[in-house]
Image (cartoon, rainbow, N blue to C red; front, side):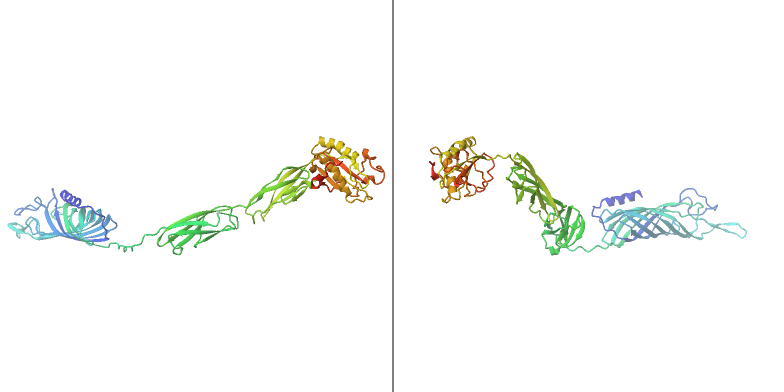
Length: 578
């Protein structure tokens, strides 16, 4: 038996490897069986019968005997490795040690079989099968029956050999293996299967129950069917095309309530050939070739907008963009004034900067208000700021408020302007320059006022201003005599030749008041007697030029309201009056 297993293994190893074979569901094997039986050996208890005149002693000279026959095997393959097998068959032997003894042994065993399907055509297998045997035998009885006389005596030499028949059903076991060689998909050839074959057939001439250790060889043909149906080969498909996909939102930052249109750009396919699925933060939300992202009711934050496209002949593609929903922020900002400190009457320029988010409209141009003074566009005018009449230097802080609107709410910002009103410097009133009736000539007394008293103030404060206001009396007949008198007086102090001074004409302000005194008091001084009729008669108080020296930064005379610069008049041609 060991030699058989060795030969079977060598046959398997000599077969070249190939791809794993297909496994059928069912197999049916038909083959020739050869069995070598090993009858019982050892001492036994026999019947006490004489054995003389027999050709042999069957109880001490038993030998092996052989039988041939056929078998049918039905196999169901549970999977590639494990199968269930039913083995049915029988063998026959017609003689034993020269005796015509007909032996028939039938087996019916069942059990598992393990197949090794690593090769395309060669399948080794191992099995262990359990079941039973049916044994029948017929032939002359092993022994003799003596012939007796009527008196009971044995007649020597007369022997009768009757026929004996035996039937038994006993336990059987087969364990071994073999190899199948595939011829085609439905037929395979089994060159050999070798099994250890154990039976328990009792010898009729023995009283003990015995077991036989037998050898079985089998070879034949197997029929295979029940393969899984293969799916028909798939139709050859063209390689799927790749797509280039990108997303373009109409805006990446929007306010609550706005809508953003997201437009896909596809390269490599007609959009009508594709399916579209839009996602917001990973959740499918719509289908279609375009997508409108509505922000109504959404919380401020960042939202991921993605699109997945696929088609029958295209590889899937995906693209993503992000949109930020902003939070409303009311207008806020700053305002500034330049300069932040002004003197009373001066102006300051205003500017502001406001920012906000998600108002109903863009932030509008700010408007300004002031706690005092006036606002003209983006200019603050300090003229209207109220101060006391103390004449001392005063300061006042004015609050400027800028207001901006985004059609949802207003935002404000404030700044301050420091308005300073310096202490009042009153103009210095000098004696009047007096004139004769219908005369515009500056007499010597008048020149003393201009060239002596006025000179002292001009030399002390060269940037000061000289104010000259002329009058004439109603009884004078020369027209424009008031302006001629102030022009001659101005020439005395601006001509710059002879005895005349050289005060810049731009610092000399002139005004003619005609016959109106304009509440200007009469200050004749020491010149009252220098005119005909004296200062007391003949309307001498109106035949004059009132003289003021206004220091730098000083206040102009309140009585002079229509002053004009000597520079604007043609007085240079007057020269230095004599």
